Length: 213
Image (cartoon, rainbow, N blue to C red; front, side, top):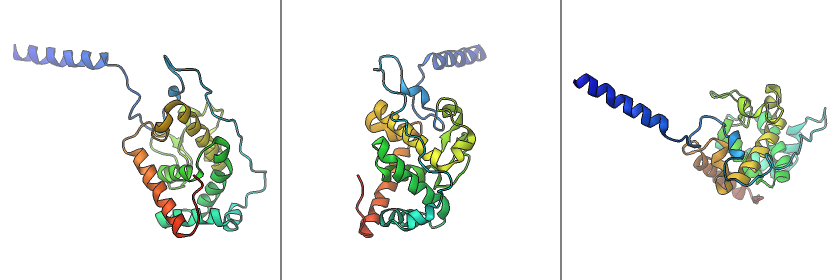
């Protein structure tokens, strides 16, 4: 009798769990594509802006461009202060593209810089949940929707441009929660980005460089 009661109780809990509605929080990786629209939502553009990568083929001397700009080299020094082992070549290219592309999406470049640092420390890698490149774009979610190949997501300019598109779209959908949405509302993610942004701005202020926000 005791076993029958035990199994009946377990069955009851299982049915109750399956009946609960799904929630759009704490999703693994960057799996938020379906959050662009939903029941009761006003129609909105699926992406904010369609700015393609801007670099002219063959014009890839990003270290020189960053080194010759007081504003950009100050950002690299800030990242270096946050992580002395950061990859100089990749970080400088990412900085260049972020400051070239983020304003087109009405985004604070320093915020996008903080997102990239938290996501990958500007390492061109494949994350454990299938996220690619320096901005950790989930290929399964965004590859087909935005017409991107895995090779595109390893290209730093494509990665930055895609991240800007996603962040801008999430700002339309989620307002002040758009930073958290970028990481699927992962616990503590927005706080890590904001703390990184605060530290970057602190290093810039110490270097006599003003924030662009």
